[in-house]
Image 1 (cartoon, rainbow, N blue to C red):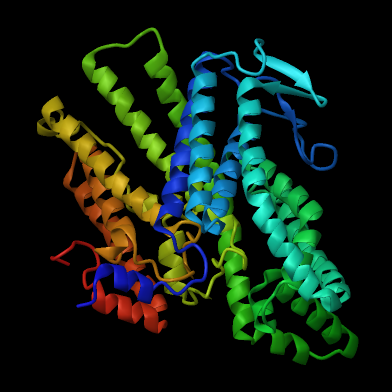
Image 2: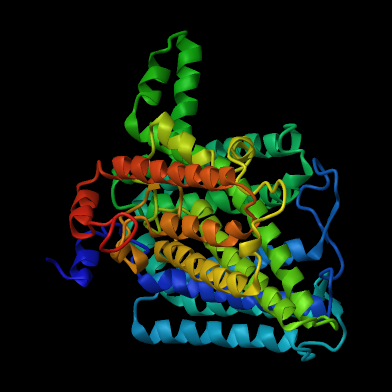
Length: 516
């Protein structure tokens, strides 16, 4: 039997994101900063301060101004991503210690500001650089500034060496990166148009996604070309182009042009019949489906977390059970803020530089169906047929006592903690329906589907007190079956990789160590 450390080395083939500490580091930052911001909001600026101007308000947005807390939470997520990437790239122990110390100091500063320290300026807001800033936002700006100072020198050395060794490729890289950028911009334009004009996304539920989509569009419009240029210049092999979605989009555009010009479907059939093109398109579809949902989940979970913080800091503390419930809901929502924050970073930030590009994407209808039926809007239909949380009549009296409620809530937090631990194990590689490298660390060193089993058990512990009839037991059990089928389809997909088959021989249990 191979030792677990050897298993991790042998069956974790992706080039990047191999540190078990990357996800933990990102979780610590997101947790510390978002909690301090929630405390700051409850004490200092409940609405985040003056509103900010929307990125697309001049052209397409019906709302010119956006709540400040939306913008600030986006900054928190960007800080988490920047520091996770920096942590991933800085390999020397001294550099790691320095970035960890910087993160600790930064979190400490945000907590000092949240506690009422009048750092930077005494007023609630101050205007400079044409912008009205809060004290917390100034603290947020120190995070990326410190990260850039730590990361800029090794990155600059790397880029200078690549430019010197690839001088002859610079004209080619400029030209090809421009065409790839245009191809990517065409996709972003289509996504932006759908997000702001399609009736489905006009629902108020998706308002934060529309804002985020606009900011992502602006970011790609400004940074997409230079990023593509540098990426093209430093590539090691032509085969790396196959994993570039902008290159795939460029191929599709060229094939469509040729098909129209010569009135033949051959070029289109050739491109769409290519396996790498199919993988890239399915990967983009995964992003388009899940990224809007993760954005909505993040803001909803943060709103619930901020509400729990206000209750704890409010004048009315209530009974001991009220205080326990307040802490329970706070920890509950904190866990989901960390989970969704890391997941969103993983979905958005797949890159050749990070080694977290998709090797393959689920290609069966069943695999997609059991995955998307667990998320809106399809989950609303599924829930109509499996309404385990729909209370009709009085819940079972035997389950209503505090001596049952408290242990169930503690168990819920424990299992949700395992669920978030599984997300942390992915680091920068989280994405449903995709294969981005075999994860063998964290809870995946013990069972192959720790997130699914932990989440399903947590559903039982937090739902059973509301059950009022036997059908609810059946409905929740059927939900468990849905997740079991998800596990089966994932294993069938990943099993095409010999590394995953080898991993399964070492980690024999799917859900419960030593049992199943």
